[in-house]
Length: 275
Image: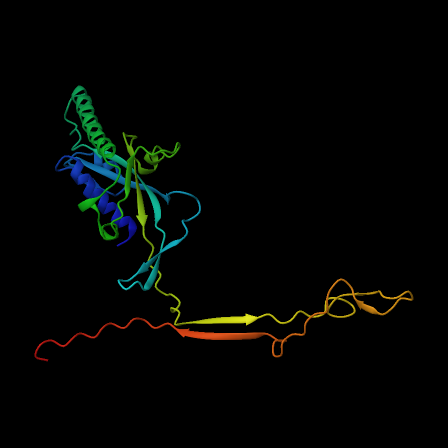
């Protein structure tokens, strides 16, 4: 099932536990004929009008590693995404007047129905005040399987997001309504297409080659005239003669060691008595 279907069913299950017995729950758009005679028992209408990602503009990053009982990496679980689903909640309190009442009786009946609708909306506000999440046996589908309870809140927290503009399009008169929001977690599928595990480790040790010439006249730098009165011979300035490199070390020398990773073997079962 889809995330929205799971959210609808979970919300309906939760409302069934907080509203009076016999109160129905509907998810279709409100219609004008709901106010006509014969509409039956009172019910709550949940019209889904807005879906958006909850939290920061950037999606959450990172993942957690999933390992089996032996500690082997079997997958990487991406971070949970959360979506805010907004419903316009209206209450329809039983059949309307039949048209045979006097004008005074019709006004009293309309007032009675409005008070009953307000009472049901108030019960819903009380339920949102008493809990922040939908948990337990109310969850349906993937929400129940993952054990990720959605957040529930009434009233909304963003100005300008109102259902007032819905009434003309739906062809009904404005009525008391409540904004109910669910913040639904969605767990992306686990990534199981992983690189194969390492099977061996190669260790190496090496010796850097002997440094080459560093000056214009040889490996020990420039020369300067020293010696007798008439100039003498030329010797290395500022350093003693370098030692010759040992035989066989003029180039790079490396030693390599290879170790193969072997997974532990399970101990063979011991034969029982009589085997």
